[in-house]
Each structure stands twice: as structure tokens, then as C-alpha cells.
Amino acid sequence: MGIFDSILGGIADVGDWIGNNAGNILNAANAVAKAAGGAVLDKQAMEANGDDIMPQLYQNLGSAAGQLETFIQTAVPPPNPGNLEASIGGPFDLTGLWKNPSIVGTGDAPAEVVSDLRNFLTLNKLPLTISSGEETLDVANQIGQQMFAMATVKTSKDGTPTFPFTAIKVGDPNDIRITGGHCYYSIPVSNDSADAAWQAHLRLYSLSGSAFKEARAARKRSLAVKSRRLVITPGTFVNTTTVQAEWNAMTWTENADAIMSTAVNAMSAMTDGNGNPIYQLQTPPISTTGPVYRYMWVTSLSVGAHEALATFSTQIINTIKAGGAPASAASLPAGPQVKITYMNSGNPPSN
Image: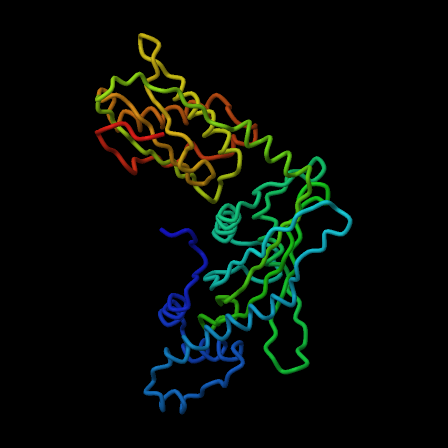
């Protein structure tokens, strides 16, 4: 499984998906041609091409993506910080084909789309939650609702393609704001007009002030993981094990950061009968930003990789049961999927 589930990114992948899923390939290809600003095909033209419409479809998909990018550049300029002492991040772009978008106007984004938006935010180090007064906003869900609200369409004066567009704005002026927009065009997948895919372009910017940066830095310090060094006799071999915890991205929130930090610190604090550490965490950790977390542990040869994995899993479960994260973490799943991604017996790794 890749990073995204509901959106296809590459032109070849998009074209192949349309070719395999469109009930009427000619109708689908002509929707793409119109968005690309090219000429549509009829049955005679299709027959003249030997009924092979795919080369032209691939070409038009690339041209349509360019038209979407040109449109979004005009529709979504960088934000103006005004008098705020704020820094601008971005642009952050997500492009491709939404395979199963919601019906426009419902204001509801499919859960799979929200999951992909959450992954997109995480990849670009954008916050998943933002405080606005006494309310905590789920950024991915807010963006999804705005993306799938009733879009506006502006009439083009020069004959270039124009697209349905929704503006996006999430956040608090005193904290951080995520602004941007989403444009798309519809590609029919079947004879049902509601059954369509969207080739789309999402562009976001962030506008953050000093208070937000200080709060994020303080949070990062509070979630720092600690490591205790093993007592290793020179020339002695050790076991090195990398373990991974992957949360369900559809329900994962930043509360999982606190759960993982607490669990890892509890594992680092474990000692044997002589008070010596059992597990040495290699620092800095490989990945401490969800929904996928990876940590490398060093142990004596008497502690195997699968024992390290079992301890890691147990500490995560115990932390969840003990409420080692904010109350809203109670809505998280029972725990992430854990596995070993690397194990080795040999000389201690350099730290």
C-alpha cells in the first residue's frame, strides 16, 4: 500500500485507471480533452486511430494537469501576512485523480479522502489539529469539507479551460492558518452522472505566528524520548532491532505522538535485576512523527528481536489503557500494527 489510497498521482497510473474503469472510454477521454483545451474525438476519429484512444488520453491528461496548475496559481496566491509577524509555508501541492469523490454539495468528504489529506499534511509537517478558541479543529476533515462543498465556476474570457473551485481556510489568526484552494474537473466513469472521478489540484499555504512556533517547540520538547546506555563489554556482540508502529491513518491524530513517546520512554526505563537498562534506544529515533513510527533498539544477545517487539507492543497497549495521552485519544483504535523492519547480531551500532 502506498502513501495515498484514494488519489492516483502519476499520469500513466491515472490513464490506466480510466482505461480499466470507464464504462464509455470515449466519453471519459473527451472530458479530459476538453479540460486540456484540445479537440474532442468522435467515433470516426477513434476508428481512424485504430480504436486506440490511450496515447491521446495520456497526452491530454498531462495537458489537463498543466491547465489545472495554471488555474490554481492564479486562484491561490500566497497569503498576505498583513501586520502579523508571521512566516509563510508552501505552496504544498497534491495533484492527481480522486477515484471516488463525494457528490458535490453534500459537504462530506469520503473517509478515504480525509485519510489521504491527513497523510498529506503529515508529509508536509503541517498540523493535524489547530486550536480555535475553545474548539480543536481536525484540519484534514475541515479541508475535506471545504473541498467537497458546492464549487464555484468562473467564466473564462480568453477561451482557456476553467474549473470548479473551492477556497480553503482553516485555523485561527492568533495561532496558525491553513489557506488555499482546490480545483478539478469531472471524468465520467459510468452512465450515471454522479459516478465520476476528478482530476484535481489542491494547493495549500500555512501562515504561522511566533506564538504557534513557540507552542509547537514546547510540545516537541515535552514529547522527547530518552535513552539509557547498555553496559557493554568491549568486543561483545549485541542484537540490534528496528521496530515500527503504524497507526490507522483514518483515525490517527497527534495524540498518538504522546502515546508513542510515553511507551518508548517506559521501555527505555526497564532494567534487569542489577538495575541495568535492558533496552538502549538509538537516538535520534528514526521517525517520531505519525502515522508511522520507527525506533532502533540495542539489547544483549539474550534479548531477541521478537522479545523486543513484544515489549514494544505491550508498552504501547499499557500506555493506551493507562490514559497516557489526552482524553480524546480514547477514540483511537486499540493500538497500531507493529512489526520488525530490521534485525542484526554483531557489533554495537554507532550512536
